[in-house]
Length: 282
Image 1 (cartoon, helix red, strand yellow):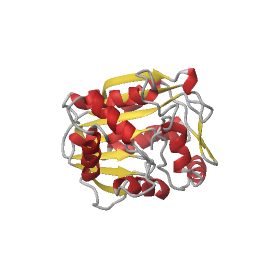
Image 2 (cartoon, one colour):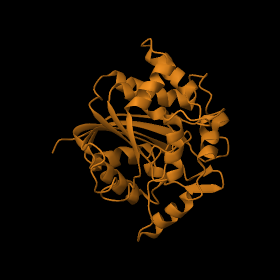
Image 3 (cartoon, rainbow, N blue to C red):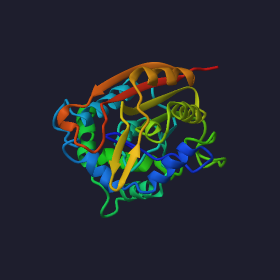
Image 4 (cartoon, rainbow, N blue to C red):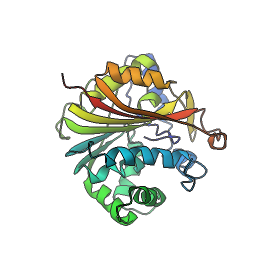
């Protein structure tokens, strides 16, 4: 999921760990539309200012995919939440995209947009902005249709399990790339759980494959309707160290400081990080 834009997603199921049980319980009150209003409508959803959080994230993604290094056949979006913006630049580079989320309500929200059903969230301003910064002469309608055509499945996921997607063969594995926005820190009760979740999703990625990870910096909670959800606060150096421990070479790690006018009371996020990491061949 994506939120504060942090894209907070749910990727946990009840288990013997009391902290993860509490996270799973809290997410049962998650309201996708409230989350989208809080983070993807103005002011955070205002893409007209180049200094805004939305343009910053979209620019990080577009510039990374523009290198041509992050490409292949299969991409998995880990913890998509109810958002699709994180794949708008990716869809030109992968023909088989899997979206995932722990919560059925988020998977249903994605389905509305993918099927172009009435009442689906309107992502057209995001699609238009990506077309503007990519500058490839593509219309936003063409961009959205390409993404819809290349998303082949929307599946449940549990990042706290050693096999996050289960034991089936519904997804081409290993993937050539992973994208994950505002998921791991939002579903982990502590830094050790964050590290293990990163280890788990890394098993889905081929050696030398790429991970694009977006997340919240120094955030401890956020709201999604009636739900007040805990977040493990992480700093830039903790993100870098976690990636290295999970077997990645960090290609880029950028940060964004949330300005005062975007601190709207729906969370206590201090900033956003964007990491491009490449899995080291063992």
